[in-house]
Image (cartoon, rainbow, N blue to C red; front, side, top):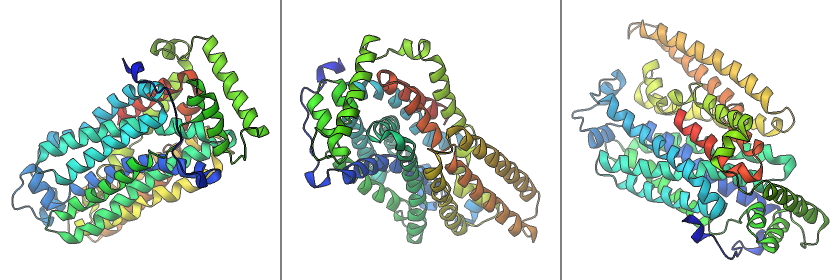
Length: 442
């Protein structure tokens, strides 16, 4: 049914003055903005859970104070909190699988536009949400948008990036995701001064709405990937887009034509093998690649990152900080996600993917073990103990190091692996399966 809507023409809408390296960087940055919005949404909900006005509005908690929040005495059903958080993950899992067909038939650009539209609608709903039901519906729609974007963006990055710099482009995409999370923590801290007004938590969603609008408008000017255009019969348009992205003065440029012929040859070879792969072929013909893509995303979620990020302010409160300090230190620690990924930008295409995962995995394990030991020590201390402050600072330091190791390794690399290991005919479905694995284990 979706094939009835397959495009029959293509027109580039980006301004000509962007042609060349500026177009390549703008397209990459715009795609990465989609990931930034996913990271931002994680921080929004984490900061909101320690806001008295949010707890009163959404969960009906009366006479809530910062002191009660610091003690963990908020009287909210943990299952309802779990549903509030997990509803996004469930719909993102579904959308990641569905988006494969959309990405193949309608195009990468169309799939990203759908994701941006869903994010914008969800941002409006969460900003104005009068109760928990509307918030959950908004987060569920947000999950659909995030599912589309998290599957589509790595594919676009891999297909527009020069072959020698593909790892850099996907790493920059992850840098934006981390920057989005970090931004949300600082925005949450900035709006904290509006307490007890609901602007203390709605303010973050207002910023979210404005940014998703920028993303939605930006997709209008986003170029389609040359590989999708050529594969779907738009050869001249694909050649022209390839020239525009490579800063060539004409489509007759030698490098442009060499790349064009390589793409055509790859597509012809894949057509000889039956065209687009089926879901059955993903598991039978590309078994080892599928296992690699799925397990890399699985381990990226099972290394403890979600327990840290989703409830980072609460984790810091439990460590011994008060509410204002927890918001401040959440912002400080989140910047380590940006600091940690900077070396990866320079190392991922030289050092390789596997060494980064090994180094990062060892570092994360040591940090988590130390956090666990220190937290056990804190839980056995009296609230007036002089050791509480030093132990809390130790936990904070280890969390910072953990986030830096994650950003260095298991943050960006698992997104690059599925985008690289699958051939073009299987890339959309393979990436969808890997992204679905991410959300399933999330």
